[in-house]
Length: 459
Image (cartoon, rainbow, N blue to C red; front, side):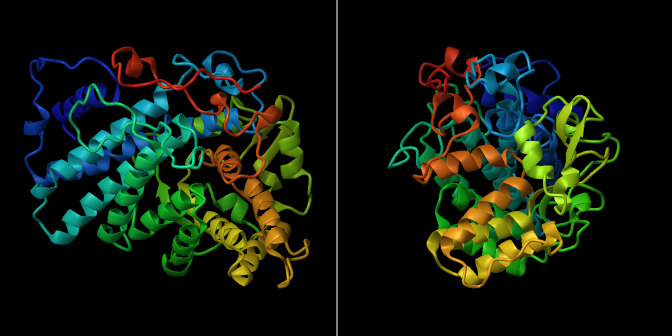
């Protein structure tokens, strides 16, 4: 991407993603957004550029996991100082390090919107045009989804989901007086983009998202909404049709975050030549042999490493300095953001919640436990009740998904929103003010229509 286009994007991000006053001048040597994109190659560059913030350290490359774990019941942040300590203590403020995820998410959304606005420049083939638009809608959807989960109370917090969510951005231009959309509106927009993405994207697409990635996120989104019939439907479609395969080998624990990409990957992020290893935040946060910037609790370590027959024990470390997670230990790995194990967990819990398709659910959870324990743990019998399936799936999910994309925090919230007892660390309720991040001050300091979240606090 050219220097001028990069500068144009950065100026637009500052204007569109943050609540600053609109700039009324064009700096010398910088082209306007309307003049920056003239060819199909320009759109292709935009599409490639959408993934830079997504894979960066402020998003899936580390920050989403970190801030989520700080509010979950796995991390031990007792020795952490600064604004992350505020997040850990459930009192996130506008100065508490909340800007990074927010800024980079809207950066990616802005690039996706710009791609869609210039999609008519793609004339080489209908398939290419659909692919680029599908990728843009996919990127826009997953970024809105991740932000609303962190900056708003979950779906189900209110009966009509009319509580405040985030701003939905479907235009690249600056909109300085926007108020927050409701959580229902945000989820509707996310689903709408994913529906279109699954229709536009091809079944195979190199390292870029496919129709199966869109379906996988539909399963994940519906699961977070506790809409189990739809969650089951899309997880089932991905498991049956995506071509990704469940890794039943005992060595799966060393291959999920390794290179080459795992056979389970449905959507994944790679290291690009010339950029150096990505995902450094993940390596540093959990690893004893790095900085161990975010240890785990002794209880989490015992739960993960206490069974000597569980091959996942290699994900946990215990040496002088504390307990940690070594999933992301190697320097250069491919990161599956969405994988078959998660799809099986979603399908199994959805089936158990509905008390339907229990044979399939039992098969899914037995696949996971047989792999993890090498056949030393008795499988669930075919006569197992829905309650027994549900309990085992949730227990195994906590072990399988540890430190992955903020999953544990969101499960605490989802289960609480479902109407079941659910608390995080120190019995912090799933719906307390401190379980969501505060917005950056730039949003509400200059925009009276943008309401901040209530002051933090849980304990």
